[in-house]
Amino acid sequence: MSSLIEFKNVNKSFDGKIVLNGINLNVIKGKSLVLIGQSGSGKSVLLKCLLGIIQPNKGQVIINNSSFFDQDLNKKEKILKRFGVAFQGNALFDSLKIWENISFKLIQTQKLSNKEIIYKVKNSMDLVGLSKSIMHQYPSQISGGMQKRVAIARAIIDEPEILIFDEPTAGLDPVTGGKINNLIIDNVKRLGCTSLTITHDMDSVRKIADNVAMISSGKIIWNGEKSEIAKSTNKELNEFINII
Amino acid sequence: MTILLKNLGKFTLLSLENIGRFIIFGANFFFWLPRKPFFLNQFLKQVFEIGYLSLPVVGLTAVFSGMVLAIQSFTGFARLGAEDAVATVVVLSVTRELGPVLAGLMVAGRVGASITAEIGTMKVSEQIDALYVMSTRPIQYLVIPRVLAGLICLPFLVIIGDVIGIMGGWIIGVYQLGFNSMVYLDRTIEYLEIIDVFQGLVKATIFGFIITLMGCYQGFHCGQGAKGVGRATTNSVVTSSILILISNYFITTTFFGN
Ligand SMILES: Nc1ncnc2c1ncn2[C@@H]1O[C@H](COP(=O)(O)OP(=O)(O)OP(=O)(O)O)[C@@H](O)[C@H]1O
Ligand SMILES: [Mg+2]
Image (cartoon, rainbow over all chains, first blue to last red; front, side):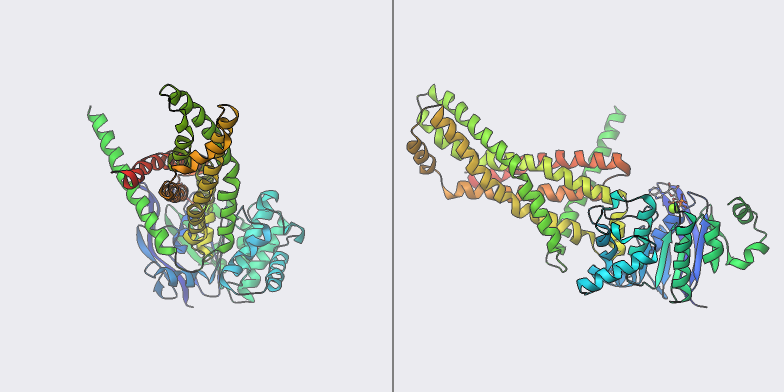
């Protein structure tokens, strides 16, 4: 079992406030890792450190055995192309229409005909259960749950190897949430993707996780296979799982 | 007293830091300018936003300034018996100073503010992070099209503003002050030199650069939330207006200093 992504002693503080305090975590190739933890515990910050959006104060992120931060911009971009990312706040481009949002990465990184692009956009929208009637609307004109799904459709359009989703089912009804869960399972099991998902939704954890990691007080306090959770004696983990 | 000194020191350091960052930002613009990809669509969109949509504001400012200028210089010169100079004064003031400076200030208010608000909002809602993870460099996608459009559009706006301003003066001259139309126009052209117009266009180009670059810079460095965006927008307009007035002085002395 080889690690695709390794966090090595990652530290981050904002104005003296410690958020990440020595994070060590492996994301195994071809597996789905779910990261859980209280609100404000630093999950999103950890994700941004992985992507190089936030520079950690100390530590490294190793992707495919080489340190991500040491690469030059071109190499970083090449690595980032393998990622499909959906942010917690969606981060849709509000000056672009829905279909332009979804196809953005394709248009920037591949040479495709309009027909192929539209085909892929529609396919992507199908996968997240979005009606095609919203294609020509703007993000501000659709509901929050629809925006969430547009963000996910945008992340998966070029069939990335690594899926990074920050609370993909938050604010969705159970049926649509189930669809997103299935999408992640499908990508990992069938297409061999690797995924890192942040969630508060225990149903998601149960369905999509191969491995689970819990973050608290800036550290990974528990990390293991999903089946081991039941046997765990970690108090914080048990408490967290029982509550949600 | 010590508090005052401390704050003054803090303020100076902060300003120096900001100036440094702004210069680096500008250098980045030139570094990325010749590099591919160039986002033509974004550029054309900005030409429309910055150039075309600024026409009404610039036109209105120009026509009324030209009119006021004609009235003021007429009443002034009448005391010296030099009413004939009105046309010349109007054309020189408009092409050299009022055209570029007023257009610059108006565009700073209109375009500078909207660039900062837009980019600032993109920053606080993680859209800029999203650009980056989708292999699109924010500087190439957002900054270069805007600054380039500003550089190119402002001279055109100023030329149009010049013509409209001179027309404003002419309307007042002919219909209110009783000048003969042909004589007024002759006077307008007689003492006008290429360098007057050219200098105005150099100013316009530099102002366009200042406004759009400052707009982008403030957007990229804005604080968190709606408050951060609001503050950045104010900073953008105030700073670029001040920079316009300061650089106007230096460009004028470079051209006509001796
Ligand atoms: N850019 C920033 N500047 C300052 N502090 C920040 C910044 N980003 C995050 N923080 C702080 O880091 C801490 C962790 O934030 P983060 O967004 O990672 O939480 P989270 O675990 O994702 O929570 P949630 O489940 O609510 O999304 C918070 O206390 C937050 O205030
Ligand atoms: Mg979060």
